[in-house]
Length: 289
Ligand SMILES: [Zn+2]
Image 1 (cartoon, protein in one colour):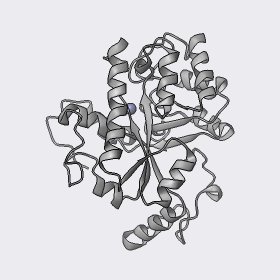
Image 2: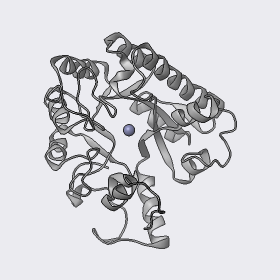
Image 3: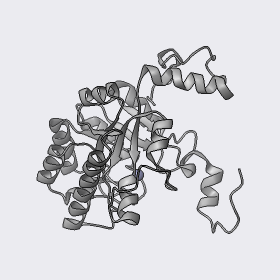
Image 4: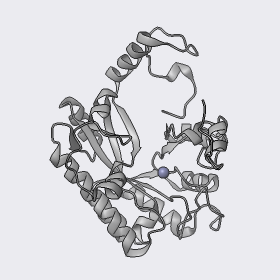
């Protein structure tokens, strides 16, 4: 979803007036018409991490119905045209372990595409995404979540770029050595001078700066430094639901000039304060609603 709020700039999706909520068959037809116009590209999916944790990175048996959030049938039913697979490791991993874990995640995505070639094809460019759409396959893109994955080595960043990784989320839930997370105590006033150098290197490499997870100060500093559009790969809006993972309006407004994109996530605690309150409690009673 773009950050622009002018309804006249939205993709035309049928005869439903702006603000009205279509229902039933009309809603499905509206969605189908929108997806005929442009591919749905999901900015963040942790299936690789799921398979690391529960399948020892195996890509076998992923073509049936699964009880995980993702399976191929539902990607198809949802008409996902492009998927940024998150090549993520927790930021409790550090140093060479984080680099190794990230490389293992990249390897999983390549093996996934090789194992299910009717469904997936690796994509590293806009042309690749268009080609995947033309061939009826899901463009499989890669994004690294958190600069801890680099072990503060620009060389590792450059090698991830050569492996096809096309965005870097600057932090995960903790600060890195050069950027503040939105869920940690600030120490860099956003970005350090070294952080600004990383933004410039990302721009030079053609990798997207992803500002999900970072603090508002980091987002502003990155927007000051970048020469290319940024994304929020999986964040929602603070003005709708106050949460440190969401984006305040003063940052959202700057995306218009940057040509940036906010990809709204539907993680329940990011879009419902009521759910977040339940989630942050002892969860001793089932959530209702
Ligand atoms: Zn995340």
